[in-house]
Length: 297
Image (cartoon, rainbow, N blue to C red; front, side, top):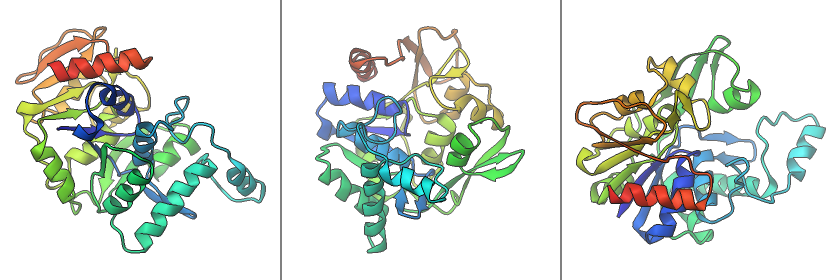
């Protein structure tokens, strides 16, 4: 069994390759929930949704969020009537949030709600929220504290990042299913998601114990720049250089191997082997090739 730690960008592409080269039922995806929030219509869990839409073949690959072919009638109507809607949420995507919110209000845990929705989508791969406890990513900027969605969308990532922290992380605990999945996995893969905002919340949870001898990570940084998103700026805000060496330092003690792109400069990190391959996933062949490469190491 393979356990994959995932955010909402980068790693879902790897999941597309993994499920083509191994039995999807042999994969468990542990997903960041530090970007979750209640919206007026329901419960928004962006990384969970991206992973589930990817695994069910519905993801909009132009944006890597939302559902391909979705309509936006509700979103446009809300804007027309003066409601503030920072997020561009499609109608079918909105239904996912509404249903999840209803399940939570009925007393279901987040893990239970996600599993109900996973089964409804016909997904055979297990999808686990990192925790049933609330954790919130807080970005400290020159304008004050904002959440990730305000930073990315309302401020278009243009404001200076001074610090990042995860509110309530000290009180949150990994779910029993997450802890069991990591313990029972033959291999743990930390996917090429943002190491700060996507992966750090997962590995910071009480109860997360990863055997480095069976763990491997893929760097999302090439030549000092992330393949997508603001990982470089977040790493700098936390005192790291925006490079694959710093990715290795963030994961030090948790992995024995870091996969980096062929274009990266050579570097050494004690107790971590650095292996090069193509990590840019432009198409299905690239995704399958990277999945096979990681599994064969």
